[in-house]
Length: 328
Image (cartoon, rainbow, N blue to C red; front, side):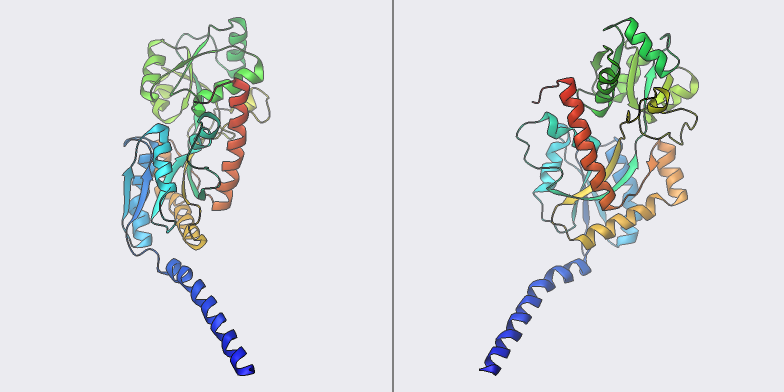
């Protein structure tokens, strides 16, 4: 009986070991084939640029090709839903931004939960964005801008790259924080916003710094302040709105990062995250591929990205509620 019981115990232990082995062995063997970076927006934008610029050094580090695949539609949710439905094997990774943390507050019947259904990998880079004013607008500081808006309620126009984009919501945060009434003029992308500002069609805009940097440096447009929580190394003398307005907590940080399906092995997530951090913090890569394109290198851990995502989800939800923007 003792021998029989001992045999059963050994058999159970061996069975348990076999159940654990495939996952461990699989993670150790990863990657054994090409890895896909799914970009949920069209080619040419920030998501696409960062995915493609990371592909070459990451391919060298992992020993497998990195294939960038654009799956476009539904404001970036179509690509996210596609990745959500893929095997959690480390071979399909989604490029996201903080905009994906706005979607739950605005879209009914989403097919996935951006927090529960994805494993954070790394924030690749921050995207500095600023409050800009057109030529002729009588405001040379954020305080003067707020004063102008108070003196002309409903007359000061601001452009953004779309309804409920982080750039639109930054203005809504300003409106609710200071009790001012601004008129939103949404556009389809930053290019039309730039044209509208330069022509005087709109008076101001909350927008990513990169596409407007040459106009700021030439004096054609004025940047009044950085919306992010910290100053940007690209324009180090430009204060944040939080500083200028003496309004603690008045900040929105925009970024682009990577997530994978939720059950992706932690060893794979950690490997990709560490390689991303190493690449983006390399001084030459950072200078030539990120800073020159107006990105701030980050390279966060999965845990740091997870906390960032939860904080942004809550902050955007509050702004949307306060602005009374109805979900679709």
